[in-house]
Length: 227
Image 1 (cartoon, rainbow, N blue to C red):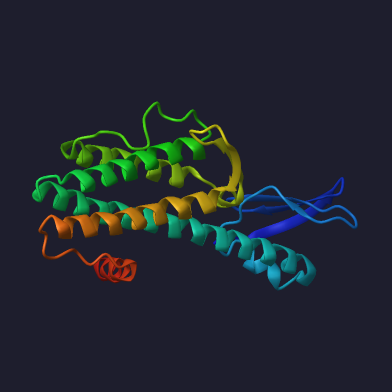
Image 2: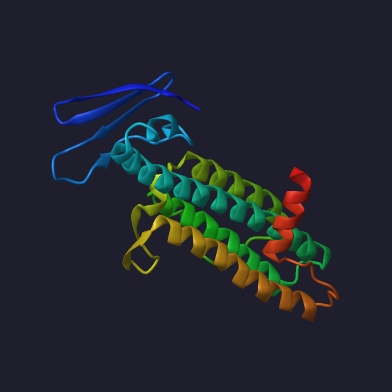
């Protein structure tokens, strides 16, 4: 934890200096305080005892930052879950002899992930169909590449980025704007939807038992491994 040593006001800006970190916030008269830093956990706790009003301000910032950080961790867990369950379904598709409909659905799921990551990064959409004719043997590599790109991107985001707005166009040319965190939720739900369809087609292809894909089960197993 960084202990605050002193603070001072200069030209209507309030500076708080710490041993290993510098926190800066604009303090304008009768105006809302604007943050221009990210606060590490617990950084300003020593200050709270001495300056109640200032403490309340930084406590709000701390809580907002903490909540946003938890959102980042949450989505990283969700995309790790998504990868693990997709791996199970890809293996089942291969073991079942790559039934046509299951192969089409998984190809669509993986292609959509690639399209959405480009939209999130505000890059041109990949030159491919949303329903590509990919062989199932290609899925393990595509799955690993997709997950690596999503993890790199999510890890690079600041807590504030999750509330940012992105603009993109569909393959039909329609323009849309959406909050980044809503796009992440869509990508996860899109995978859940199509895996349910894949499961039904695997059953029709003769697969007798499908894996248990409950998210809470994934979390329980993850917590066991961490302890």
